[in-house]
Length: 471
Image 1 (tube, helix red, strand yellow):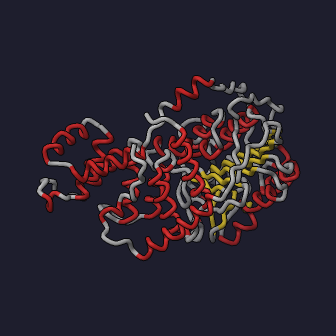
Image 2 (spheres, one colour; image 1 turned 90 degrees about the vertical axis):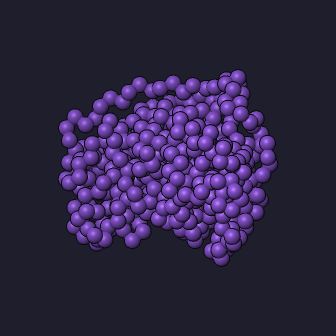
Image 3 (cartoon, rainbow, N blue to C red; image 1 turned 90 degrees about the horizontal axis):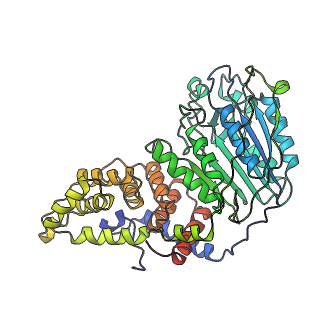
């Protein structure tokens, strides 16, 4: 195994780093040094107070949505089975949302855990995100602030409780009829910075739209609920797994997004403790509902069992750890020394769907060293993009990182930092350290700030790889 982390994909064939890149990496290195001084915080015991407010708004006067109420019920049931005291509300008007959020804040306990989940219409205006009540009649930009609920209001109620962990989960980026009526209203939601001890999760990346889904639940919520009860998985890793699953299912049309400043580990289902239910979710509909449809409440399905893996299972899982950093290094070296004869064999493997062969071809065509050293490999940006994209679409993190680099530098494609960021995030979530560094770099270019949560992820990923055997 090489204990070497190779430089980002694009940087290898740029003669000199730009001033922008140099300044960015100086900021990253400073952030990395700072992160090394952060001591780990132990997870709280399972007896901690867990409170969740779950809201699903479907019955709008315009823009009726099929899934949010179903999504809310599904999430409420799952959280209740994981030890949360759940407050479930459906089809709330503005007064009802404001009052319920205030009451929710009052139920949170110091050093406990609070979770707010919302499914329904949402919108951003001037960089602020608003949740849309079912009675909202938004005709102009001025109406949004007075007829919507500012997402920061929810955060302020949660922050006031001084609990250990706060989570804000918004499946609220669906195709918005209010945005179509108002040119000043942007599609999707705006990026939000998480306060200390907070994780904010969006069903798709900032400024993008999420798919409602053809089944009873949205694509995001279905995958989220599927992952929540995974034992021994931290909350950050849960959302990474959701992001990978949703991106794969939608062919990268929808990339879930998080902003986190959590200071310790939190597990929905700890590795060796069984959570007990704290009773059914609270439910109130009639008095605060503007246009509630009849027969909308249905009995929640039975609680699922949470499987707890044995030590043998955990050891077996460890053996499957794959060292993508080593693979990336070896692919790069192979591409640099590839001969024309080897190229013929590699093409055959790539055409059969081999992702490592496809990624290596992408590198080789991009380098095009054959024009200088007689290997006979011509440079072709089109072929480089074709093979890199093919492997990236199959979920291979080395190729996803390389594709992100192409978008970041505008090589073979039009420069698109947001798309680069999405591909880096997909690769970083699978533990590819080069992509984690690139993600910090492109995020810094977009926001001007280094996200410490991303820096911590690099160190956690490196520590985990140091402890686990290689496949």
